[in-house]
Image 1 (tube, helix red, strand yellow):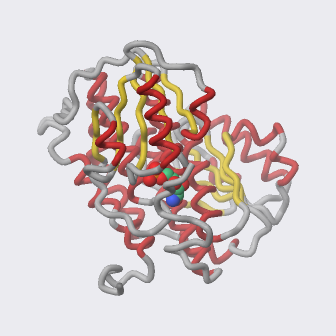
Image 2: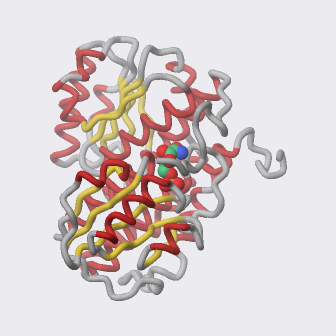
Image 3: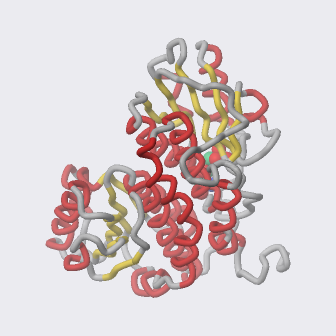
Length: 355
Ligand code: AGP
């Protein structure tokens, strides 16, 4: 078992550190040498009019991210929690239903995909496991190539899901304007490595691991990251954590914010979304909550934050993934300081095969 962990205390930490390699594997052979085109050989000619995503847990957060990317290339897209899919608007002809599932065996996701097929949709599995039920039952399969993940908490597979969904939209879009985005994807493994080599996540965890609750906020592509940051935190630390779209704070959750509830705010770039999230940061700062900004340092969010978790400057879609790495590390260290059984949290299974 120790050998399996390659010297790391837990599989989760090992898998967090495997992310640069996992991302390289995911990109390999899929981006042409001159960086202008994304080729996904395993897919047939997909030309969906609209996309519905079905997924659970962390994979649902990847689906939320994927849906935003599809909308950004003009394809209407929506993400559904798989167990709620039955109540959704049915897909119509030439709609694509994408099941995002690391294991390919999650019962809720399989059942939503079966329902989608029953309604006449084409289905695509975005999965890590070759030959999994999702891969076999769907019309098409796209592999995230993360390698085996042992820790119950999904880490490297989330990163690989995001980059795979990014590749999928680039493949379908095929525009000259994608060059910058593709360059951002190519830089991603080394940018993740830079975070792993020099992070203050442990110090943040040390300072705050005895708090009443933890909140995570972000907008746009950082909204799924906020949700994921909170899910990871609660799953392995057993502490109360919630993620919100930054703008929703003032519609209720702000009542919970006190000097003993750290707020992690993901803010990158200095555009409209950053400006608005900084507005939300000021709201929590005014309630004396400690603010930890996860930022590339482009905006002036640092002025309103107690601490900064730094990420390299990059494109918005890669910034989301980079910010998530810092949050994974904070969760890991908080859970380690609290003495939790990180790789096998109570009541949870790696793959949930019942509905
Ligand atoms: C994440 O840390 C959890 N282990 C869980 O939310 C998981 O992502 C979910 O059960 C879905 O699993 P899947 O990707 O294998 O379908």
